[in-house]
Image 1 (cartoon, one colour):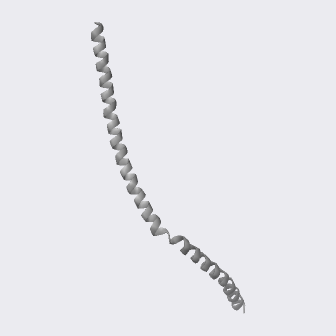
Image 2 (cartoon, rainbow, N blue to C red; image 1 turned 90 degrees about the vertical axis):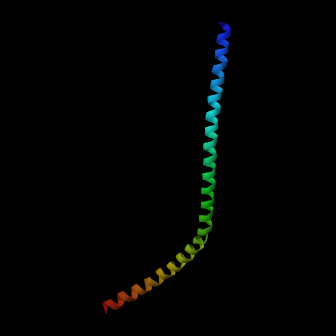
Image 3 (cartoon, helix red, strand yellow; image 1 turned 180 degrees about the vertical axis):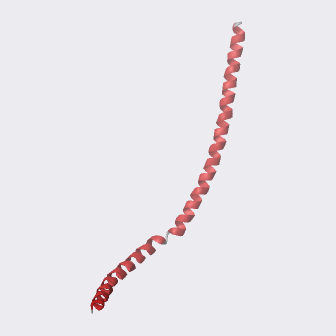
Length: 86
């Protein structure tokens, strides 16, 4: 009787270890796929960053030009108002 319990216990331990090994393999495969997808995303983000790197200086230039235009428009609106009154 005692020998049977020992054999059943060993068998149960082997089944548990086998199931754990199977699920760890499945998880490792999933993590590998996720890693590959993340590397593709990283590559895409770097490409976008490279393509958009010229936007920052261009926006600064456009803002400076718009500030100058806004200043000029104030003078133009003042003259237009004076002309409309006369």
